[in-house]
Image 1 (tube, rainbow, N blue to C red):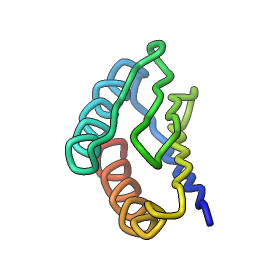
Image 2: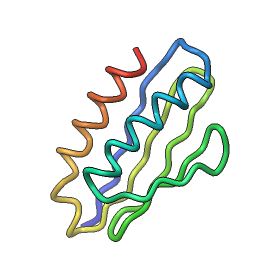
Image 3: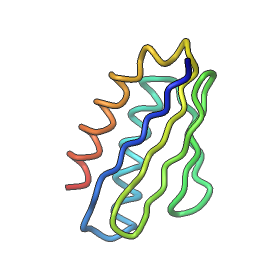
Length: 93
């Protein structure tokens, strides 16, 4: 069964700094999990790979990342969610 992850992190810095930090967070995750990261705008990114489809958005006071993982990839859900939460908290607080 597919699994959806949603991670939210509040921030207080300006959006340009947040984008820079999220480029680092997502770049790290991309290299670790072979993800493709494509920025659609200054505040929205798509995240894809076989078995993974999602997005991240920089909102005025928080960043939201949502990933839909297919059944074979869902075994990694806990690890991916934990790493995203940790990295986003570290970079954005």
